[in-house]
Image 1: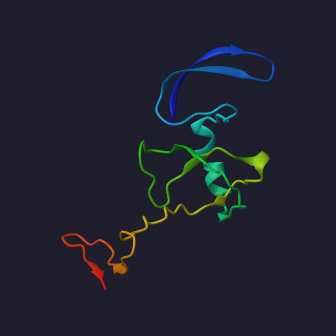
Image 2: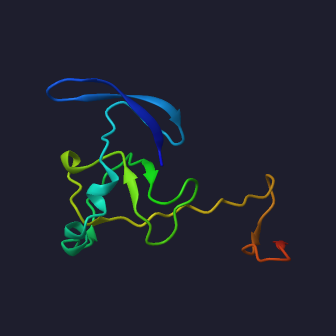
Amino acid sequence: MVAVANTKSQSANTTTLEIERLIHEVKQQDVVIPLSSIQTPEHLQSFEPHAGIPIDGLAIVGMMEATHYAVRGQAVVLNHGFVSGIEQGSSYTLVRPAQAFQFAQGEHGLTDTYQEGYHNNYRR
């Protein structure tokens, strides 16, 4: 769940929702879709994963069945969609760059990757 909202007003083209409780980031012009629209059998039968187009500035604005962490194979909601060129079945791999390790000025060295129970720094 991303947020809890109630209907504030409705016009011919738009229903305005007032956010009562915010759980994850929601920004102006984010698109709301009913959860049922991505859980229907028709959707699952026509799902063909393929590489998504490159887009800078993508933000994950929601996660299915999670509140804090996304795991392998989990569906997430992005802040871009069809208008930006993302199609049904577009697949993206999420990566987080490793923290760089840097010695104090003038020192050189290597660092092992952290393993449970020990961490070694080598200096020359």
